[in-house]
Length: 149
Image (tube, rainbow, N blue to C red; front, top):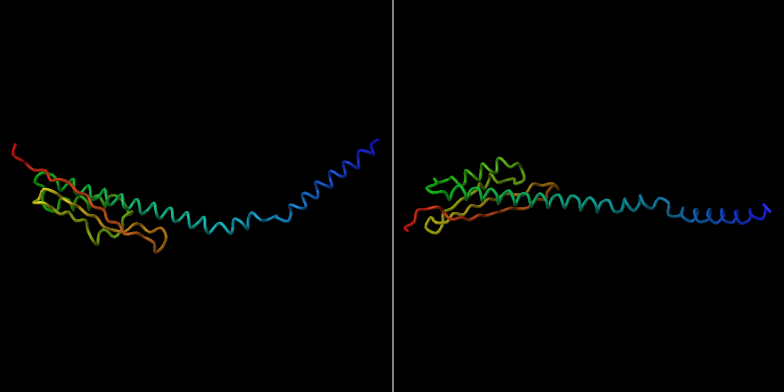
């Protein structure tokens, strides 16, 4: 009575062993797949960091240009006030925008001194060696003045 149950039990154990043995052919496939995919993962990681650095550099340059416009557009602001304000801003923000010292921020009065335009140029911080982006941002504003009623 007990011996009749053993053959079905043995068949079950044998079937399970065969299934497990069949799975051994793919043993170690996950590390190989990871080794193949890892370069792509690293490239995507560093590319996303580099793109983020470029956007931060653009944002820094635009904020510096806006700072220069806000300073230069004040009533009876002296020459160079906008450039000085943009330079102070860039010195205080860190190194997301590099090389701006060579070109220095420029603020120009246009349209009979009623408009001011400030431009900031530089390059983005390089996370991947040899890869950086040129950055140029410009801001415009109306100069404060007394007008007749």
